[in-house]
Structure formats: C-alpha cells, structure tokens
Image (cartoon, rainbow, N blue to C red; front, side, top):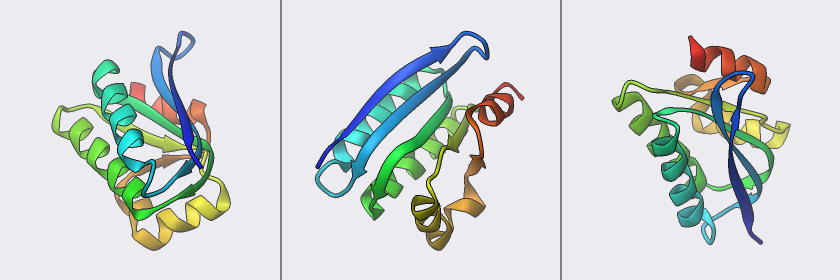
Length: 116
C-alpha cells in the first residue's frame, strides 16, 4: 500500500495544509517524512497536517509526525494535526500524542490555532 500527500495553501486562512491519504507504515514512512519536512519548510513552520484520508499509521509514521512538530516548534512555528479518524485517533491516544501535539477537530479550528 502507499500514501499520497499534497500541500495546499488556503487563501481564506492564509495557512498551508498537507493533505495525506492512504497508509503510513514502515514501507512508506520515509517518503511521508520527506513530504512532511518539505511541507514544514515551505510553510515557514506553520503547518496543518490533515490526516483525514489516512487509514493506518505505524510507529514509524508517528515518529515522522513528532519530528516535524519538534522542527516547527524549534523554529518558533506552529504545527497542528487534524482530521483523525477514530481508529487513527486511538493510535495517537495510546502513544500519548494527544497530550503532546495540538489536535484540532476541523481544518478551520487548526487554521485559527496556526494564525494565533
């Protein structure tokens, strides 16, 4: 299986969003991390990660999310995850990521957090 990712800039919010679909597993995590790092740089460290199309995320994928969030915070940016399906949200909860990352219910909420 694979994933797709595309970076969009929503002019209504002036926020960059990385839209991801598919499975993020050991075979695809390196490519996902590359897309995520590129998107974080292009967005100036203010990025919404929309995982609404993700059906599965492994520990390798979680690590990529954490690394990107740390880079954004290090560079005084903002990083928000949104669109978590219930079973993906459970993975974030069990791993403790709900406590250390900003998770928004909608892309609009995420954009408001990014804009501060």
